[in-house]
Length: 72
Image 1 (cartoon, rainbow, N blue to C red):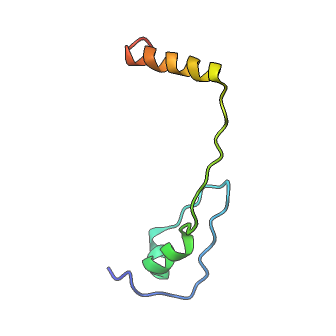
Image 2: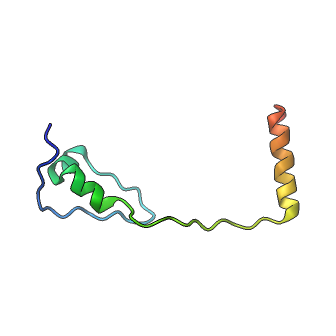
C-alpha cells in the first residue's frame, strides 16, 4: 500500500462541533503526511475549566473517598 502518492484535491476542513470522519481511501489518495499536516492542530490547547468553591471541592472529595471504599 503506497501512502506517499498525493493528489492536489482539497482536503475538507474539520468543523467545530461536528463529528469529522474521513474515509481511508480518501486519506490514501491525499497522502497520509499531507492529510495529517492539514488536519492536526498545531497550536496548544488551553481548556477553560470551571472554578469550584471550597464547599464543592469538599463534597467531591467525600464522594471520591466513599467511592474508593466501594460505597458508590
